[in-house]
Length: 70
Image (cartoon, rainbow, N blue to C red):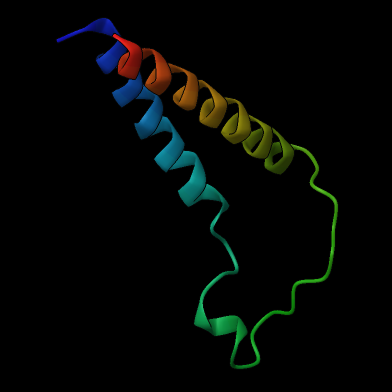
Protein backbone atom coordinates (compact mmCIF):
# COMPACT_ATOMS: atom_id res chain seq x y z
CA UNK A 1 0.00 0.00 0.00
CA UNK A 2 1.28 3.42 -0.90
CA UNK A 3 2.05 5.96 1.81
CA UNK A 4 -0.36 8.38 0.12
CA UNK A 5 -3.23 5.93 0.55
CA UNK A 6 -2.35 5.46 4.23
CA UNK A 7 -2.17 9.24 4.67
CA UNK A 8 -5.54 9.62 2.96
CA UNK A 9 -7.13 7.03 5.27
CA UNK A 10 -5.71 8.76 8.37
CA UNK A 11 -6.94 12.18 7.21
CA UNK A 12 -10.38 10.79 6.39
CA UNK A 13 -10.74 9.21 9.85
CA UNK A 14 -9.70 12.48 11.51
CA UNK A 15 -12.17 14.39 9.32
CA UNK A 16 -15.01 12.04 10.26
CA UNK A 17 -14.25 12.52 13.93
CA UNK A 18 -14.08 16.30 13.70
CA UNK A 19 -17.30 16.52 11.69
CA UNK A 20 -19.11 14.36 14.23
CA UNK A 21 -17.87 16.65 17.01
CA UNK A 22 -19.46 19.62 15.25
CA UNK A 23 -22.86 17.97 14.72
CA UNK A 24 -24.44 19.30 17.91
CA UNK A 25 -27.92 20.82 17.81
CA UNK A 26 -28.84 19.36 14.43
CA UNK A 27 -31.58 17.00 13.49
CA UNK A 28 -35.31 16.88 14.04
CA UNK A 29 -35.24 18.09 17.64
CA UNK A 30 -34.89 21.69 16.50
CA UNK A 31 -37.89 21.25 14.19
CA UNK A 32 -40.28 20.44 17.05
CA UNK A 33 -39.53 23.34 19.36
CA UNK A 34 -35.99 22.48 20.29
CA UNK A 35 -33.22 24.91 20.91
CA UNK A 36 -33.27 27.80 18.46
CA UNK A 37 -29.93 28.54 16.90
CA UNK A 38 -29.18 32.23 16.78
CA UNK A 39 -26.02 33.45 15.13
CA UNK A 40 -23.02 33.28 17.40
CA UNK A 41 -19.31 33.56 16.80
CA UNK A 42 -17.12 30.52 17.30
CA UNK A 43 -14.73 30.80 20.22
CA UNK A 44 -12.16 28.65 21.91
CA UNK A 45 -12.26 24.94 21.20
CA UNK A 46 -15.20 25.25 18.80
CA UNK A 47 -13.21 27.61 16.57
CA UNK A 48 -10.14 25.34 16.72
CA UNK A 49 -12.17 22.29 15.69
CA UNK A 50 -13.80 24.28 12.88
CA UNK A 51 -10.50 25.55 11.46
CA UNK A 52 -8.84 22.14 11.82
CA UNK A 53 -11.72 20.62 9.86
CA UNK A 54 -11.15 23.07 7.03
CA UNK A 55 -7.40 22.41 6.96
CA UNK A 56 -7.93 18.63 6.95
CA UNK A 57 -10.54 18.89 4.20
CA UNK A 58 -8.12 20.83 1.99
CA UNK A 59 -5.34 18.35 2.80
CA UNK A 60 -7.67 15.46 1.91
CA UNK A 61 -8.45 16.99 -1.48
CA UNK A 62 -4.76 17.60 -2.21
CA UNK A 63 -3.77 14.06 -1.22
CA UNK A 64 -6.66 12.68 -3.30
CA UNK A 65 -5.46 14.62 -6.35
CA UNK A 66 -1.92 13.31 -5.88
CA UNK A 67 -3.29 9.76 -5.53
CA UNK A 68 -5.33 10.19 -8.70
CA UNK A 69 -2.33 11.54 -10.60
CA UNK A 70 -0.13 8.57 -9.64
